[in-house]
Length: 77
Figure 1 (spheres, rainbow, N blue to C red):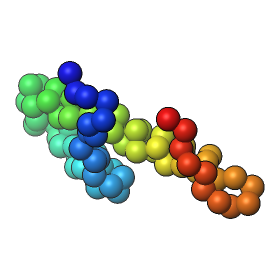
Figure 2 (figure 1 turned 45 degrees about the horizontal axis):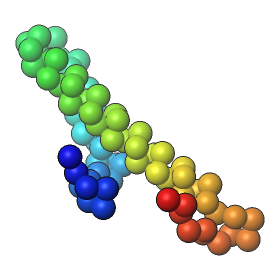
Figure 3 (figure 1 turned 120 degrees about the horizontal axis):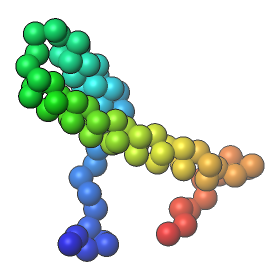
């Protein structure tokens, strides 16, 4: 079990995640892709969607920390 002080590896930038998702989608749309390959691509895509959502959630959290004066408040642990 990872220690709470350990950080998970940083996710790639959102634009890279979205590019990879687009590439996976193109592969999934190929009518000649085998079922097992399609399932693997789908799993990879769902993992990317989860990471992208986490990236967006973190960005949203940062935005909500900006107070009326435009200063960024320290995140509460």
